[in-house]
Length: 407
Image (tube, rainbow, N blue to C red; front, side, top):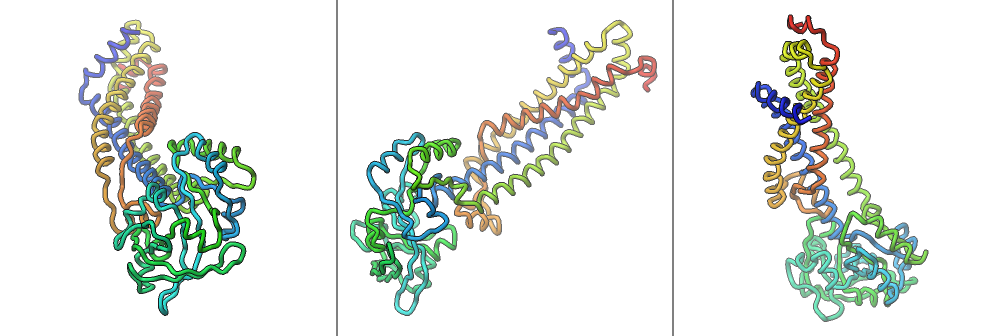
């Protein structure tokens, strides 16, 4: 076997131009596929992480039926045993309690329906970085009856920090909810709908306002390993009673999931076209190598070399060509991918707005996940070995006399 390897290696460099053309075909296959796939996976990961961190969390726990009927009556009581069960679940890192409902916001003659989120200021800031969204005024203090408003909502209601906002709603079990809140700060989010609809209260104030003491509509969870999302969900569902429902971000953010899946399908389609072009390129160069060596094969068989041994040599030649092309593609593409991983490409126009609508940053990062490199390398190796099928078939069937005459 060592002798076949040596012959194959020497054969490659007898015609350097032919070998380099074939290696270049493999190189461009791996190079282009890596750049394209890294860009796709990187943007998907960023969209998922940003959307999850800024809104739902990876998992949410609700009272059973809340997601289908989001009323203040579908709440659950926060008790220490329940919290400890969730906190002690493997892979769970952060718990963010929230009480969410709707209210009519009023200031002077201006009124508007708003989404009210009652949350723990410290935990919310650790999870979503809400404090960084404050563009005027300040974040929650230790005082009670404070509210943070989205910038577009504040503009519509013609209020600013230091003003008073009246909220009217229906509280727990039909109790009338009314309260005056001091506008502590103005928030600005990437997504316009959040700027025009959101009002944040502290969890304590929200529970008092809605007459729902110690009650929550959701418990948002962040996890350590997103790859174990489904396993963590199943573990939590087993720990908790049937009175609770555990939902993943994929179930809650269907529009984002569908957008990613449709874009991934189109990306795979484009990648398939690229692979087809590359496969024909590799096959063309392998065919050229075979046709140029007809007399060489005929001489080798004439002096007594068995045809299957020639096939071994062709396989090793193909293996060397594939490995050289793949290694070159990896070495050239990785610095580019790593650079754009550290320095994402900023997006503008419609592409940027599409990202913002999903509460994600308008950038295009590249992913450096190992599976991207291994998958593309394996696929290109498969393409390369498929291209050797014809040369092997030719060697096993060709006519020696016709090959001597170049036919």
